[in-house]
Length: 407
View (cartoon, rainbow, N blue to C red):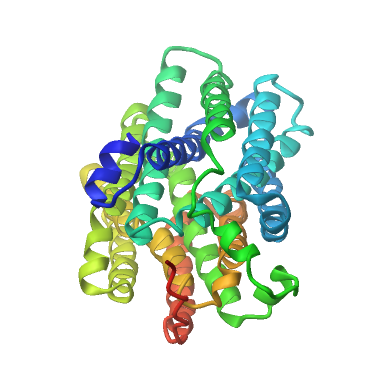
């Protein structure tokens, strides 16, 4: 897996780097599967615990606190323990939370499980983005990395809906995540930390003794990037999580066909990341992101205004395709907008705080759905996209800071 994609990037990646990249891809598949499965499993979770949409959305709020904790912890942890141990911590906490879910814990304990998932995903997301930003052609590599999130989110709903169709209990899907998590933990233990491109090593060699987190947090561009990614991830995961419930309960579509339509959303996300990264290299990342934001609005409006099955599926695909490259391209851009020694901390904070949107905005969407109906998902998506455009207007005008040339 790592070999074929690194070959397509046409950079001299050695065997060790290919293993590291491959493990990063697998970790993002795991994260994507987790998010993709949750949307399909939400009706079953609500039925098992006998709770309404607003109450079940509390698990997203718990994830929010997990992401928030990781946002403020990741930068300090990178500087103190290094990215390898940071990744081990993140995957370990994630697997612990998934194990608790498989035990069918009481509903009051379920937020703790989702807190662990939020914290673990935030740490892994920040750690891998910081790790790979130092690799050759990082923009393209980061798009490939996040494409594998789309791969996981694509197959997650298929696995979950298939197991439910076969009358398996809803927690069965999470055993697959445990197996992948253990494999990723083993791989990181064996193969990470031995590359010359370890960004934390470069940052630690700087003579400045000032706390890197506080230094990064004083930069306006770091907060703007985090806010932009917050709205982006919120839009992506809200659409992926609630669209299945929207299609089955609001539009009364068949469960299996709705699962395939949601998978089409994640397929579009994956294809967008695999193909549009090259477009960004040729025409510029600024134009790429602006075009993608326009595509998101078009896709959401198709789903909203044309309630016809095939058009809805097409609209979901266009939305996912347009959302795809925004996150990884933004992560690559931030390395040119902050001082070199602050790059790992800035990426860690922006990615973790941005990923908080994966919990906060689906929670808000659930409360809106409970109060006013699931139809509110689509105008909610438009509002999030408008906020993304507003933040992007301020972010794209920031001056670039050229990193020092590395030998």
